[in-house]
Image (cartoon, rainbow, N blue to C red; front, side, top):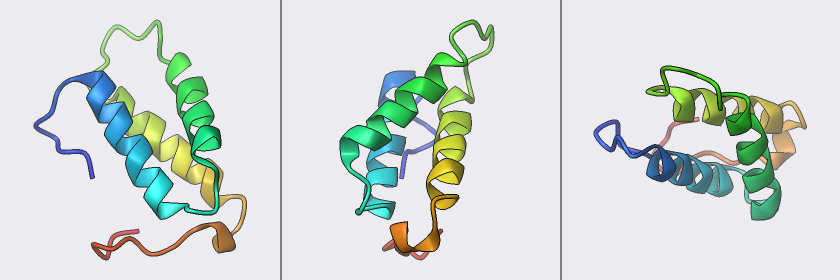
Length: 80
């Protein structure tokens, strides 16, 4: 999972995307990437971008979960 100490937005987004790919192995990585890019674009005009990666990852996770529980597996670290 992305560390909160890492403040580089691109690395935060990449780490979140990696986590989502691990959590949703039946979803093609390209589809997760596309969702991440689309959601991130919503924040292009945001003045404060400190939490954008968190907001993007949460929205993409919600989108993937809405497609059904069979697309999700338990995280190795026990978090969902």
